Image (tube, rainbow, N blue to C red):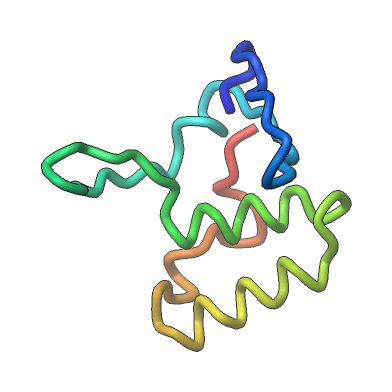
Length: 90
């Protein structure tokens, strides 16, 4: 979520809100069309990078599993991932 947005209030499913601002929020967004409606979602490489950035909250095992699955399913390649965190915003 953007840093200034209000968190949604939901009872189910349980949601943990993470806030990003600036480049960290805008980087890695892809636009997909669903029923002719543009839908903005984060790409696989950005999602994996964010999991590593938030590894203390989600766990290193989750970040590693996401990376292995993304590479195994060929949804991203190593060059598509930020190198040693140098390209990560924020």
